[in-house]
Length: 257
Image 1 (cartoon, rainbow, N blue to C red):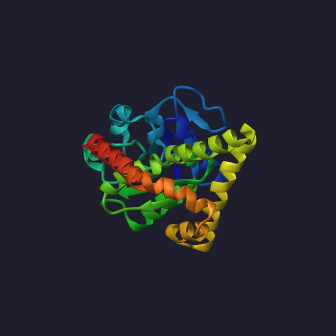
Image 2: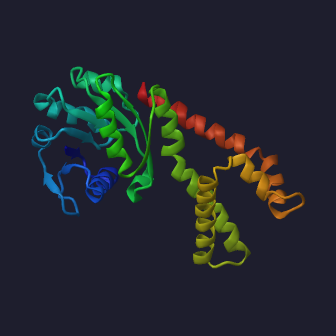
Image 3: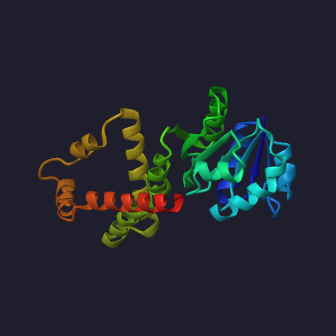
């Protein structure tokens, strides 16, 4: 399987490195600048496309159409095109490619750069079962993946998993800031916040406990966490966060349309 990646920014580089590390296919990239790691490289998108079974487009959304116009003359019917451009729907990709039958739209996220991403994807009707398995293998090389049947779910994924690292960082920032103000050093406060979140995530993943169950287990009656949650509940913080996520979803839909 020959995989050609067009664009070698943060996400394109992360995917290329993951595929190389996991030994998934023969990987090449097309980019104006030579990548800072060892890989087959060209500056010609058409040459890359001609020699790939899967073409992964990893450029900014406003550059996708020009890239497709460039490679369109050399596209073959059996090639799979994967786009990770936010806000570019399948129907638009199909239109730009003159109704190419094998297209996949993916929403990856930042942790893909450390092989712990989550990718939500939707395939066009021309992708068969075996090809879907190939796509899943590719996406799972840098984390986990969820295939959806309703493309609109990619818009909510854009808000939740795409924006998730920023919301998580804001939460951790508050934990660390509070710890530092009370007396921890900046380094120790960061470690305290990171390990608390990391350990909690592993605990919930391994035990399978529901999020609400964990909240109840930790919040003993009259305890310290219970005292803290009284403040948060007064601010209706979880509903506020949900409103923020739905605002992101609404914006993702606007961009897609």
